[in-house]
Image 1 (cartoon, rainbow, N blue to C red):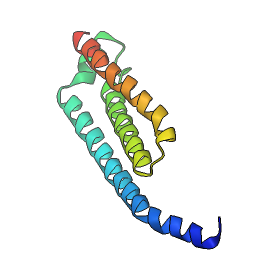
Image 2 (image 1 turned 120 degrees about the horizontal axis):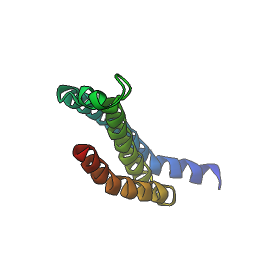
Image 3 (image 1 turned 90 degrees about the horizontal axis):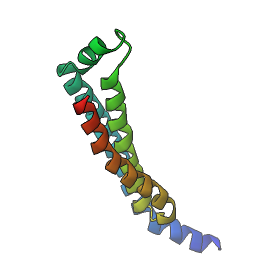
Amino acid sequence: MDVTNLQLYFTNQFPNLLQALLILVIGLIIAVVLRAVTKALLDRLDLDTRLNRQVEPNRLNLSSLLAGIVFWVTILFTVVAVLNQLQLSAIAAPFDLVLVQTTSFLPRLLGAILLA
């Protein structure tokens, strides 16, 4: 590939790179906000105190754990969106599979927590 073709390739890909960067930044902001909202909601429900009555005091910090899970699932959605925007579907496919498995597992996890 000569310099002209390389320059043309990067010129054509530049809008995709900017869009991917924008998706990444917005996804990170959404992930941080969702983590904070989840933590605040679970703290307001006093989930940790209720669980710690049944287990050793101050041993469980489930609200932080669940808020972290929400954060990383949102980041995973963001990574898949960024990779798809960059047209890297071969790399995005395994992440997409993990995302499908994770999202199918979360309702079961939340149901188990609510039943406990």
